[in-house]
Length: 122
Image 1: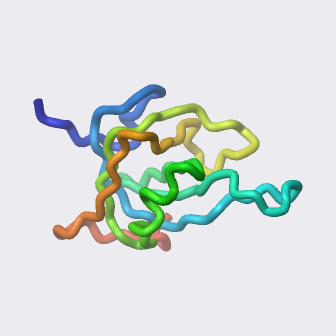
Image 2: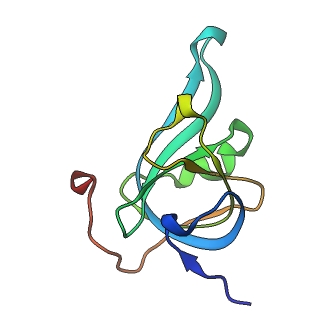
């Protein structure tokens, strides 16, 4: 069974078995200032070829699996993730949905040619 590629606009809440390809715009750690800077999660902003921006969250327990591969500006293939609704107070994009990495998520940098678009286009 082939895994299908989809755009962010095709995503619905729940476990996603499709693949999305996107450019990583930026990423940062979200820390709790009331608890001595305790790491709560890592946020990423990624954009697909339709210039749709999506928020991604990685929990602290999953960071070692992905942290070394994060590189702003690179294109990635993402598969095996959860799609959930954004909590209004933490929403970073126009989308009401966000991607959450889980135990089955694969996040691999793409090396083949890809569309040329930059953060300045957003």
